[in-house]
Length: 338
Image (cartoon, rainbow, N blue to C red; front, side):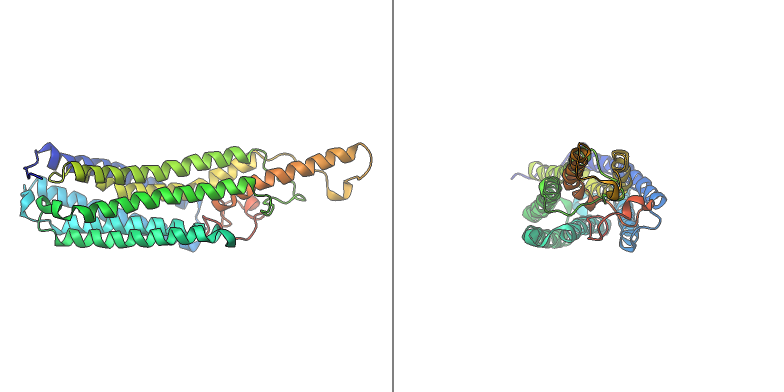
């Protein structure tokens, strides 16, 4: 491939655009962290550790790309003068955030998966190991590349790392949707709501569908961002167009995970709003006469609704700000309590 000097818009202009969009997404990240601590002050300790850790890594990433852009834009450092340390640390931060978020998703799926289906999670673990390996290779290529103009010599390492991100993102989204769908149809799942307490989900199928749409959307966003970065490096490897997409990758990972955590309260509220009035106490149930058929219909309806209700267990948290629903959940691990 013939080497050519990139234009100003293909180099510094693309990097500047990436910094601006990353700053906007970081503002959304900060807002989501604030919302998290407002709604979940007594959340699980693991979550309360992970959230500030991700925010710190994301803030570090933003500071590195701002500093690197300042050096290239204001100080007018030539692109062929070598990759500065800030650019290298930015790539390290991006890969670390991506691996951390996807690993958290894998752990939550593992806790929710039942024993016969854990082979799916084992496949996810292998894919995650592949992503970690690709991230190490990509970071190594970044530290050994002499300057931005020579990145064409390390193109396969970069594309391998980005392709692994897209593959794992799609795989995670598909796996979570699979378990949600199984929760709607598998009659062997335990009842989520107690009949004696009278809380029965009335429209949990609609909630599950909305959760699937959200999961697919968040997984698609990060996957498309990684694919766009791969495409940019393949089409114009001598330019910095890829930075406009790559700078956004870590921000999308952090925002999708925080939105995943913050969605629990709205899901719980939706389930409470869709509940119906309590049934008659068990001691009042009659087994003869015309009233018995209505009681049987009510019990049957509860049985059918509970199948869909179980699939929502993975999105609820026992350490909820409101204890009404959390008290009635089974004590099994869920996707958001691990």
